[in-house]
Length: 367
Image (cartoon, rainbow, N blue to C red; front, side, top):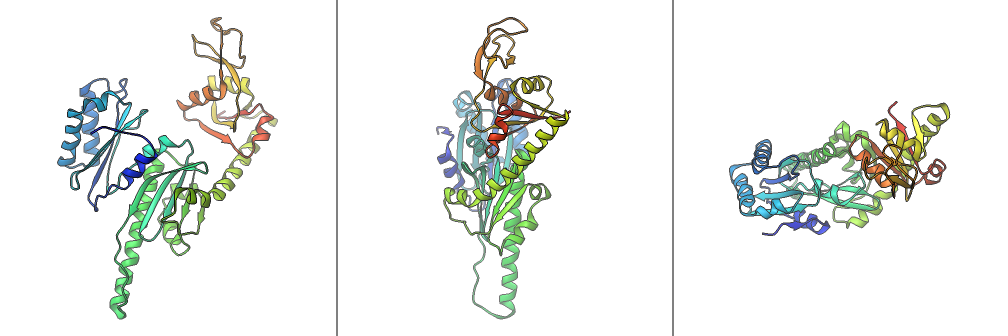
């Protein structure tokens, strides 16, 4: 069995794995040699993950056998995702292009959210919920990637009247509420692994109160809006069109608030920096809390090949060791710097002109 390459088609195929309600193990292995340099270290990682998920002996042995017989899976990838359901015979492996947080999830559906996060740079959470099914997405108005498809089989309504019908109907509503709770729990799991900037829920007006009541406070705090439509079977681009007005409105509001904070801080000598020189200085001091970038901004800076220091001066020599500077894209390198720290990066799409007045790059500071 060859490991599948990561792509949107891979996610679609994995999301359709039919477990018939049986448990499915979703396992993510980090193969970074600096963290797990030996087979013994990788085996310890695997054992801990299988134990934490409560995987049964059959799935654990299938995973171990796969890794024993296919050493190329470990050799040729930065990380590996494995999906196993011993009850149904499903066994899939996906080679990943970069490191991933080690995790193991036991569910009735494949847990694909870490893969979805690799296919989109946008960070919205979108839940499309109907009475019997749900579809969960990560992305934004430029790209929505589906990471979980939930199809709960509910008893069909029947025409029998009287008390029996009333009891049956109550049972149906209880199952619907349970289905919604399970959907909200999966959305919360995704949010806790990699927090959503905002969340949009697509659900009928009839179902919306049930969904809203099931959302944990962490998700409710990120809720940007509710789209009152039934899009259970809609294509991803139709769902994208439906949620884009909500996303755009929330992005405009957030960008306006961030620019207002920036302007006030700059005017009063508060915790803010604007322009490449000032922002680079604050990055060196690790004072940046929010990095603001204008969409499409391209700023050339100089990178010292010896010390790795970024300078607003695109040519010339490093002030520390005198090495000749190499021209680079300052925006790309600034994002790489803050990726290693807990810094919020916000690319402004609607307030671009206002940020250009400050050199297309600015920062709100911790102090």
